[in-house]
Image 1 (tube, rainbow, N blue to C red):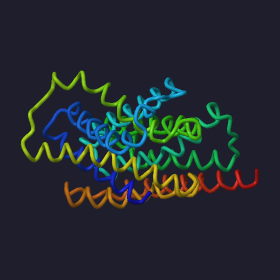
Image 2 (image 1 turned 90 degrees about the vertical axis):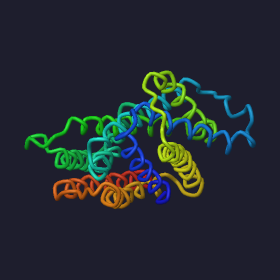
Image 3 (image 1 turned 45 degrees about the vertical axis):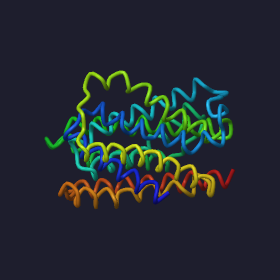
Image 4 (image 1 turned 135 degrees about the vertical axis):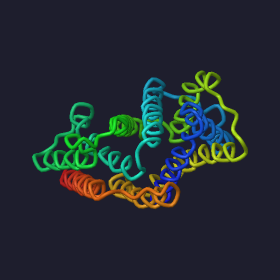
Length: 277
């Protein structure tokens, strides 16, 4: 999990660099095209045509579209915000999952978990600072990324145990590539050698990162793995400084700490409730 989220941090840093020189649509295409090739290489020899057989095709497509939405909004947001800011806002995903779990999964949330959700959103507001004239419109895209990612995680829960992980990952790459490819010819800018290499790296990072997530979930249950999502803040801050010279301000660090603490408490309470049940 730590390796996977370090890989995703590298993916965001690569995307942030590329969108300064190439259209966002082209960068998103590179991410999904590379992921698609990776999925074919890894899964096709073992599964063949079984890779595309799905009992929940509509759900697979919806799940993939949600991740596609999260990817597009995130790639635009990282072009304007620091990596530490986008990751701090993205940490609200477990809070949003808890909110949506009530109507979509029928889960019950007690007063302490509601309080943790409220505190977490206060932490997001500390990062965004809407009343201090500091808010950037791209922060709204980061919130959209977190919301789409939360719905994506909920649908992933519903697919778990019903669909093979390989099929789910294949559709993730396939749908994203199908969605973005028609737009690419209208904005295409032929990359130089560095651009080609970074775009290839972008796709590889997406494929490898999701593959490591699969391996992690084979070895341990989700409640044990979930807290390690937050380790992403460390490589995000380091890459933001080393590559772009960005250092998060005190507000961003304070807000990230609040969101992280509330998210970890939610995970702790969820585990306690399930153990009690």
